[in-house]
Amino acid sequence: MSVVPVCDRSHSWFSSFLVCLSLPVALTQTKKKGLPAKQKLIDEITRRLKGEVGLLFTNRTKDEVVQWFHEHKEVDYARAGIPASWTVVLHAGPMENFDHSSEPLLRKLGLPTKLQKGVVTLLKDHQVCAKGDALNPEQARLLKLCGIEMSEFSVKLDALWSASDGKTQVLEPLEPSAETRELSGTPESSEDDDSEENANEG
Image (cartoon, rainbow, N blue to C red; front, side, top):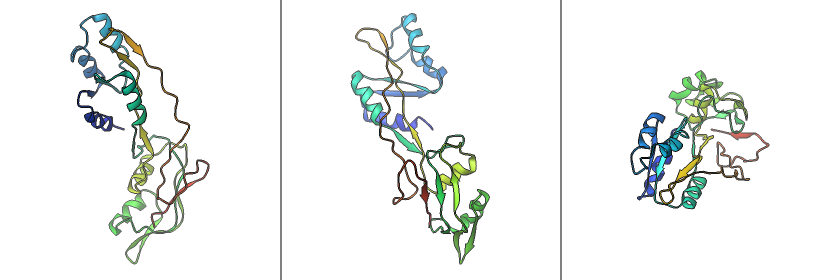
């Protein structure tokens, strides 16, 4: 998932800005925007910039930053290769949320469908995905077509540098919340972790 949602959220912090860039560009940014010129300190910061990273420049306190990123998460459609968060089953019957022109695509994606009196109809129950299994491209596309968002995006804060003392501090990761939130395919679906999530597009 893109880091764009978090970048957008940072716009509410008018005195701050978040650089959401590739590693080479992020490394370049450490030599700008008010970071100290001492090479030793720059090395301490840049050596932690690995993979998908960002740099947040702010005058907010450490506690404010940690709390904000802990509380703000984004949900999105899961991509191929991501483990399914729960099992999704579509029930046989009319799929009235789909236009008749989408029926060939649904069949191509593996759904046993046909047009009955101009209405896309699922001929039998179909399991789109099983919890824990890596999604293939067809499954990911079906989940998106059904409006089921499984992916949750959050930012892990790794370290901070403070201008007040010129030191770099490694941040301990926050403990995950004991409450697990799952999204269902339909509003009336149960969110029981041990049961199958049933999405009926009819």
